[in-house]
Amino acid sequence: MIETKRLFLEKILWVSILVLFCLVGGCNTRKTTSPVEPTVYLMKDYFPLNDGDEWIWEVAVVKDSTPEPFVDGDVSLGEFFVDMNDNGVYDYGDYWDATMDLNNNGAYDGPDAFWTPGIPYWDRNDNGEFDYPNGKWDEGEYFVDLDGSGAWNWIPDFHRGHLKAEIDSTISWSPDGSIISSRRSGFLQSDGDSVDHYAQDGFSNDSLGLRWHWRTGYWFDWEVTDLFDHGPILIAKSETKVGDVVVCADTSYYEDQIDHIWSWTSVFETVEDVSVPAGDFPDCLKFRTVASGWKGNMARYNGTSYQWYAKDVGLVKLEGPKAGEYWKLESAIISGQSHP
Image 1 (cartoon, one colour):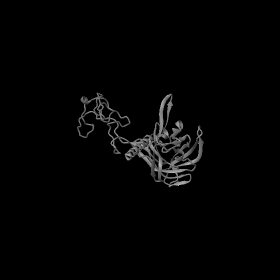
Image 2 (cartoon, one colour):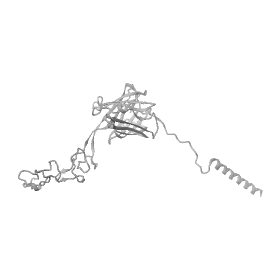
Image 3 (cartoon, helix red, strand yellow):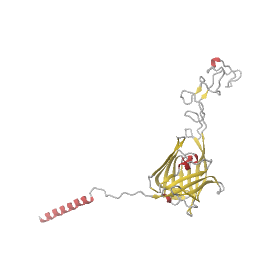
Image 4 (cartoon, one colour):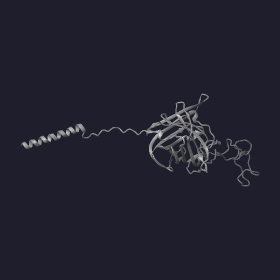
């Protein structure tokens, strides 16, 4: 009897311990943990601006675009006639009279004559009216599908080569106190030294973020910069993390009327490893840029592009904004260190 009582008391003790454990630790509750803070990256480490820094990229950029050939406008079929010599054209000896004068102008109007109402025509887009040539391709007009896409396009004329950029000793100051470094870039010619189609850009990278202040020069045509009027563009915050979005926008006016609106949106999408001719670069910052409304030598940036920045190196890869455009880093000298 005493033994039975002892066992009963032990059972109560163990149940009490179990209940206490559930109350304190929670039988079916999850262990709480502190939220993981997102990694913060210092942009100054990913876009160096040291005097003498140098980059060479393998590039493919659109130099120009040409439209696929097309037939502009509907086609006049001309008035009917009796082809006496069966040569397919209206000429001496063929029969035509007033009953065939469909537009009542007293003269024969052939396919090459200016179309007027009454003359039969090929209505390419089936809209029930004659469409005169307007200098652009319209739905239904015949075109030569050079790229096999099944749709009428402008065919890009690519310039493929090697683009070299270097930071020189020229610096200036922005009104807010940032030091603006000058970066000169140009396409290397066959001798590997001289450059063609150059440009000069001004960047700052400090507590106000990575900013693009100005752009001068030319690539394929001399064009006035649009950045002087609207800059600087904020490319990235000084301390940035995945998911950060920065938006720059402005409006131009002409005679008190809106001329155009430009915008530049930069999104820090993710961190990725990148392999390019210059080597393998881990944990690169990947940004997506959406630009619109730019004119002059900034117009080439309109559209969506992607950039990858490597720590202590800078831009190692770029894609877009036009299909097929890219930059891939071939070599770099940053703070005296060579890559590869």
